[in-house]
Image (cartoon, rainbow, N blue to C red; front, side, top):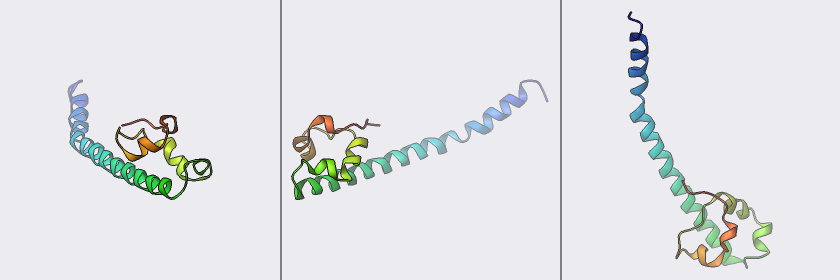
Amino acid sequence: MAPGEDFYRVFVISSADVPDLVNEIYRLRARFQMLEAACRAGLGAAVEEDSLYPWALESPWWYVTDELPPPPSGHYLAEVMPADVWRGEPL
């Protein structure tokens, strides 16, 4: 085997996994978006049932706002909850 041939063989074998990795990234992103939408829906329902404060400090939904990015403008929660509540970062 030539000196660079082993590297080339390893590179070809590992690059064969790239399409699968890209597909997995797209799949995980879609799953995250569905989870984000479900959390926003649940949080919206919880906000509608109770007043916002002190509900937010006593509720497990508060942890969801720590992980979610701010909702898009025009979204119900963007109008009800202050911007500093949302601590997550968008993908």
